[in-house]
Length: 277
Ligand code: AMP
Image 1 (cartoon, rainbow, N blue to C red):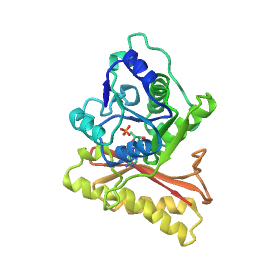
Image 2 (image 1 turned 135 degrees about the horizontal axis):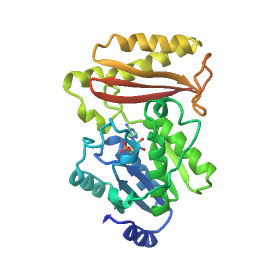
Image 3 (image 1 turned 180 degrees about the horizontal axis):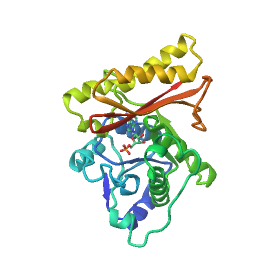
Image 4 (image 1 turned 135 degrees about the vertical axis):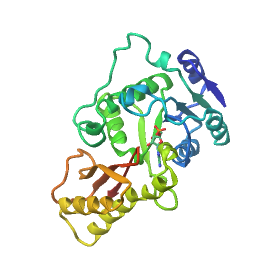
């Protein structure tokens, strides 16, 4: 496995890779969610590139960029085991040199949900993903459905800007009790970790209500809220039942519908979603 730290070196290494090249963009601190993407890339492509870059541009000023968990030696050894060919870990200074002014803004779908709660987040995501695609030139890139809105934003960018690569979304990997695995789960103390299952439980409630014939999206959102409010350590940011393409909130549930939520558990903000089919 080649470990590459500069853009020039990455471009040189890229020329030697046999295509198609499968690519996974990450911020590191690997868990089974990341590894599921790397495994799929490995199973389907002659070459696999993975990036590790904690992207400052997608964090708000009051967010956790400085404390975001990092463990590079462990990440590299896991990637080695998964037989990645290249890991690209550029510096912030090279990705955002002084005077950097070229931002990628995807409108509309970024106004809602995560975009509304985290202004500028998707501008940072779209910009860094665009830049990583330009440097690595993958044929296909794998993303987690855990970040459903991110998948939507990246797909829209790739389609509308005719970037000519395939975007594949893969299912959310969960712990045994349903909690979606996430690097940020490392912030949770044991009580918060227990309370954090409320995200998945409330999504299960939404599915159950839908299966029982509840069509009123407002009522489903309300019942999800009431369930979450019973958990003293949890604080709701948003609860949504929306169109999976436009992210517009639904009045009456049509399928498919994206049920998604962001909930603070103590000082940790967690997100999760399911597509109700
Ligand atoms: P991150 O390092 O958090 O930027 O995530 C890198 C990639 O892993 C993104 O495409 C995420 O959507 C994906 N990912 C994160 N958590 C999960 C999960 N629990 N299941 C599947 N994919 C995930």
